[in-house]
Image 1 (cartoon, rainbow, N blue to C red):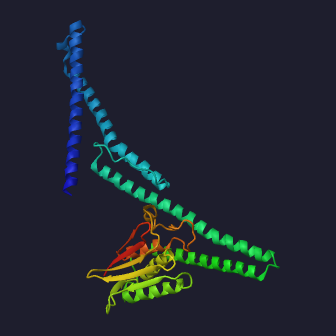
Image 2: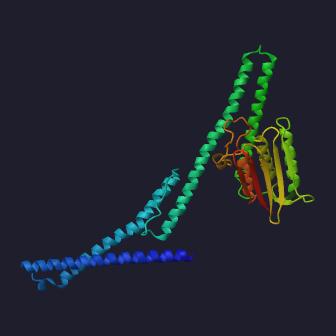
Image 3: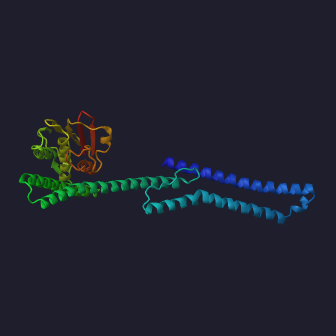
Length: 358
């Protein structure tokens, strides 16, 4: 508050000083010009300076000075106030038209502090809108790609089955398995997008009730372990405080999605025979949940985008998934006023840490 007042005072002093200098120069110019004309006319015998200095001539000089001062004031007002305001109007029209790359100039000591602060706020809003627009376009592109692939597979294998009625039973069974698998994948993708959409539209946490977190973690671990039991052998360790249910106030269904997604991600990137650990620490003001795997880990480039929608660390797409789980987990944790961080490096696995206030 004090800094803002100081800046306003500095701006007022600067503007007052500039106007004073401007008026002084104009008056000096008029006086010097008049004196020069009188002196030159007297020296050349064109006029008698004593007769020239009359009330009427003095009024003319004052009138000319007033006109010059008025013109300079108009120019000053246009430079200091009107030009920045017109620039603001043009920028706002561009933004309203969908041009989120437009920016306003925040520099110039002649600009009022309020206009400079408005320009900074405007540029911040434009940058956020620009980022949102980029994410929207990326989402549409990724959404189209992720849906197009299984739909193309379904159509292709269905056509093969229809065209070749004499196809061997074993080959037919393999095609039907692919169709079934792609159908489940498509359904899972649709469910994930719907779930993420519901979460992203929320700004306030609803259905906030106390529930036993330790029990929820154990159920989530059992669910994920059963899912992967027929795919790869993983040793899962769950550590929760003994005789402590760790009651947490939050949306139970949403938080279960977080633990399932984190555990599923850990199983997905763990090698055959690897180990995954789930740990709960009950602190006085918060709870801390960590999920650790001993897989290949991630480099910094992958880590920077791990919470982006549709982003998958496995660019070969050999592992199942759609790149929405971690994005949804981050949003759910944020709704609970918590934090989610990742600690990873190539060759040493990955640890996700979630901290939630009680």
